[in-house]
Length: 194
Length: 240
Ligand SMILES: [Fe+2]
Ligand SMILES: [Fe+2]
Image (cartoon, rainbow over all chains, first blue to last red; front, top):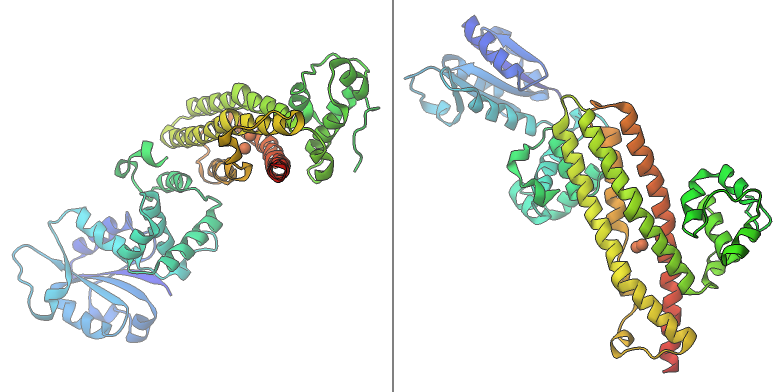
């Protein structure tokens, strides 16, 4: 299943600006469109993982098209613009907010990407997530609890990670995670974990 | 598989497999032995010839490991060889690897952060290895020698030693081995090659040779020393 990010806004400045910010976080396709006519049809919505940044006035239409599919809408709002009704539950990026908010949204999307997009020896998003927690010193039980999965599943993931990387020890995995920028060395006490 | 015999010249052993150089040193043999045979050199230095042959042959052919031959020797010979091996690791190989890693870091232009992590990881590995060796030197080997003295010379065992067993004593090698493999994979597969290649190759070659030496070493501890002492413990306990 492919994953795609769409920026839907009438203003070219907003489209291009947002797309260029997203491109530092997301290495795959970013589609920029100005109206609903260019929006993927319902069939495609069902097949793809879509993250749509959409201006408030077009959001209702996106939600209708997106019903029951894997489309997630994020509102593009301007200052002082009230959000009402169904749109209340959606996440927003404000034209004046900084990139960290955007980063959080894109990171979540990347995290939930289906695993089949990874190559044979690349770690899947789920495995990276687990590796990150292992490297930060969490126990299998803590990892299972925080990701709402069973300990057994955590152990299976860890076996797969070790199989793919050829690294078994926790401190070895920590080094790998830092070298590959999965965690920031500032997040952990190096002396303790390595 | 052609095994070395006491009639072979020692110089041939060395030219056949230079990895055996430090192994020969562990018996107190140094170079400059001309055309003398293994038998002659061992006789001169009072080295147990069959033991010397089994050690070099097992090291030379990874598939050759004559357990029953090994088990015939006195544990004293084995401990003596293992101690010399430890000495070689502590005084030479481990400091050398650390120095080589430090040189590697210095040669890096932009990636010193990652390389420093590798050094940190190496030091963690080193401290575990040294702890393991110290435990053997301070506790396991003295116990082995006391058990041997009780068995071979009838020296009475202390109350405390009666309660011990080598199987619980000698710690597993898996943790230390695991870190060595991790270190290798981190450098070979994942570290960005922003360093002097020759320095990195030097480091890896030392690491590979050390790995091979350690496999041989741990194998003697696990497959020979432990069963040998277990057998003696059982004999002593039955006689009690
Ligand atoms: Fe040892
Ligand atoms: Fe050992």
